Image 1 (cartoon, rainbow, N blue to C red):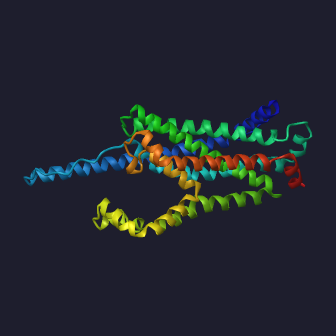
Image 2 (cartoon, rainbow, N blue to C red):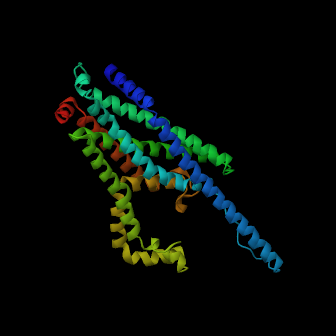
Image 3 (cartoon, one colour):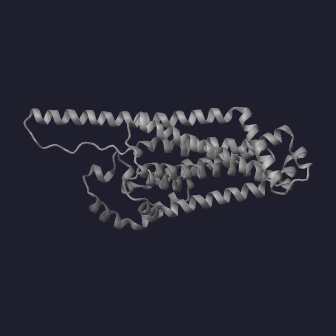
Length: 323
């Protein structure tokens, strides 16, 4: 246990010295803040358009008006979450790859393993370090997000909103830790660090971009801006009646999407933040009942990444690949 904590502290110190974490946090904070600013400005434009519409109706002598647009603060985080699931995971891959690549590049593996350390102390120290780094960084990001919602978005956050933000932060930390550890495992299993990085990037490309894009392309409602059924003025009940004739196709499309852990993360996070309308303003118990499978798949992906990093980064494997 002492070896593990020492190696973990060493790793965190190394990361702090490179200033990479500062740059990474600043960049991610900037993009999520920008997404909230854009969403807030878009809502203000909608309010302005609505007020002009109401004024025009009154001038025409009409008393019939559509209800004003509603602001659901957490829905303004859609862009920020999408940045974290794509750009954040890409940086997580680079960070995880560097954990092993730097040791191979400096030739310090033999020095580290010349001491009598536990078989899993090297990997365990790095896993603890990356878990601590991402936990602190995600906590900081969500504090920035919350402050931006309050200050820029003028969002009237309630107690349950803070709970939803906390749950979304936990999902985000798990997701980013998973990607760092998968990249770490691939870097440990390949002789050349660059080969491990290429493999990790290919995996990231397939899971984060290709599979979700295939699922979105297969969804007929995504083929027209605003939705196919909405453009045809088909209500929800008739939409469900139409789609019931294509249940096999929809099941296949859903299974394709579920092979991507990124989609699992997105579905659960979007639900808790109310970005997906069916879960908006619903109690947490209702959201859990509808998304617990997504959360469990995300936890399974995290468990696989921890196990892979632990067994791939042993003394025997690393020294053999470092020759």
